[in-house]
Every structure is written in C-alpha cells, then in structure tokens.
Image 1 (cartoon, rainbow, N blue to C red):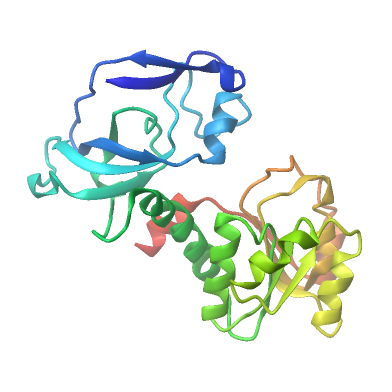
Image 2 (cartoon, rainbow, N blue to C red; image 1 turned 120 degrees about the vertical axis):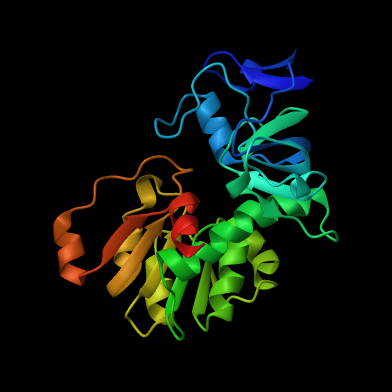
Length: 273
C-alpha cells in the first residue's frame, strides 16, 4: 500500500511516499481502507517535533484524523463492522491506503455524509460540542467569546453555544472576515488584531466581560483574555497555534476568581460516553 512516512523532524520536505505492508488489526482493532484524511494541526506539530505529549515517535505516518470503510477486524471485534463507513481520530496513520484504529474509537458515518464532511464530523464537531457542554458547561444567557471564529472549530462552537442559549462574540483576524462569520449567528463580531478588543467585549457585556473564552491561539496576546474575562469566568485553551502563552500571574486569577484550563478531546469524550 502507499504510505506517507516521516523519518525525522522537518518541514513538508520530510514527508516521503513509500510502499508499505498492509497492517493487520490486533485484538480490539479494525483495519480501515482510508477514504479521506483531514489535516490536523498535530500532524504538522508532530512532523516538526513541536509536541512532546502523544508524539508517535519517528518514523511515523501522519494522519491524526481519517475516515473510510472497515476492511477487517481483529480478535474480539464484531465482524458486522466490516463494510461499515466509519471515522476516527487520535490514532495516527491516516495518510496511507489502510490504517489501524481501536474499535472503541470509531464513529459511525451517516450514508448521506461525504468523506470530507465525515472527517469534520468526527473531530471538529465532537471537539466543539465537548468544549461547550463538557469543558466549559456553557449556560443560558452567559457571554461566550470564541477566538478564530472563522475556523472549523470556532464556527461550530459559536453555533453550539448559541443553541445552548448563550450570547456569543466571535473574534476574527480582520474585518474582511466579518461577513463570513456572521452567517453562523454570533451576537457580535470583533477584530482581535486590535489592541482594544477586550474593551469591545466589556462594552457588549455592560462592563463585566465574558463568562467563557475559548482560545486555540494562545501566543503573546493571550494575556488579553484575562482582561476580557468576567469575574468567576473561565478561559479554555484548546490549542496554541500562535505559540506558547506567557506565564499567568496568580494575582490576576485571584483578583477575578477566574479559572484557566486546557482541553483535549479524548478525556472529555471518555467521560461523556
């Protein structure tokens, strides 16, 4: 089979197309004939050796989230899964014709979903729902700020938070993205490239700030979240695409009695299942 392999850390040039043996599923696993693999940020971070947790080690095949048809099952797995349309994430190996996944990590893909949508459904949709309902436990009438509101996760988080009864502020990098984001129903959209975006949040919330802030960027502008969050508020980091954030002074947390937490899908999915 064809497989994309990363032998050593590097940029896109580190990706090598090779011929490999089709893997065999072990106990509790399935073999998936891959139809589509999305590009997860962790694929890039692992290739460049920018992550330490959950790194697959070298050599490895990227493809952190993928979908396809179950081709074979290992011991202890129901053979009725063979031929089923499924999606999975967090397993690596999806950048190949065939890939292995644990049977318990599969998500059934409806027949009317095409493969690109199936990948988003299994990862972005689950992530977004868990952010709103498990990580932050968003309540009706809370004010929720969503960074990168024009992105795959951000656009879904806004809609799910709205369906939970929250009032939503979408943050985007430039006014040219306003019209695109407005179709997802936020109560307001703010350009977070402006240094005064926390003031915009406060103006919309009668000076209180946001009850919940979802941020997948972090970076050197992350301290602005502490200015924008309300007393007793909650900041949830789901990524650090802009780099690591500066240390958080405990006095700022104490002063607002606010909390800061991280998020990864697996743990929340396990407790919600």
